[in-house]
Image 1 (cartoon, one colour):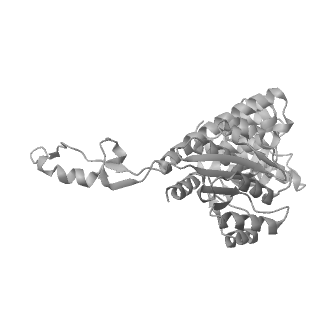
Image 2 (cartoon, one colour; image 1 turned 30 degrees about the horizontal axis):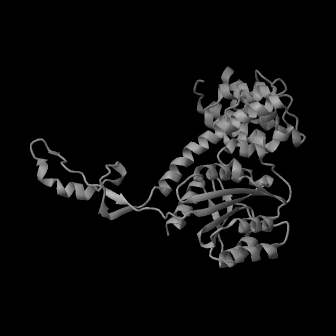
Image 3 (cartoon, helix red, strand yellow; image 1 turned 135 degrees about the vertical axis):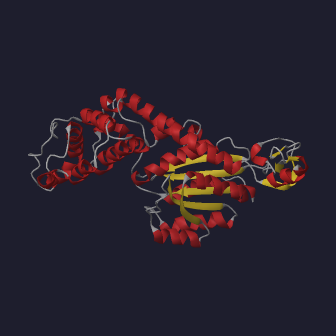
Length: 375
């Protein structure tokens, strides 16, 4: 893919309307890019009833099928642009063929936007397409797990205890100042080097041996699909940590305990049924029944807080949890962007009932839980 000049870039941004004043600014590659962009974005012009049939270019919009368009996009554009185009195709124009056709799924680059589309449309897929979709899900989950696992390990690795020395020589525990001070007599002024005879390392505090219960309640309504994905990955990362017992529960108007699938987030996500109503108070009641030791339980409610059942009962159940000493964290979003869209009035009522409410990335949630566990 060769670099295009600034005039050609502006021509691509402005579209055919700029051709009269900019002339023929596009070469063969530029015309192909223009056709690929036109195939997607001229839909708005068509929806508005405007005539776009006269658009010029080597490949007109009517020529490209979905597989052709995917191939062209991947041939012509950098990765960041590809992801944006695929995102607009799915979210803005609802082109479900991107994830419901085998020949298309074989060409797309796995990313979270496509994963969300797979979860929304998997009920439309035949077995062949579903098998390819599962591979896409597995690759995106692998990427998310790899990233989050590091953040979780860091959050739960323990805090440095500067009062105690350690015999374990681990770089992250190096007591730099103490090491430097105790070895100053080994400075060689001619070579301008400091030779370390005995590096000093700090110890780390131990975690509580008594287990904490972490109960993730995940709203599986369609608007929460990104949070569902990150909840599954977060639960998988928390699973098996010393001192922590994790539960994952999905809900709409019914409650489904998915804890047995936590170690296989791909299988878990393929079981999720997006959509339906929302009975949040029923999910909170289920969490309350799971708790063994109230003062060592954290209930994380991941929802937009639009309660379809009894708002009063939801507030009472959250108040009962906090009154017995359990921590309740309400998350209006759990994803990389942490951009929430939620019922703010209900959120205020939950805060007044003793809950903490906000929006977090998965890494921030892991750090928050680690802080509560070590307190």
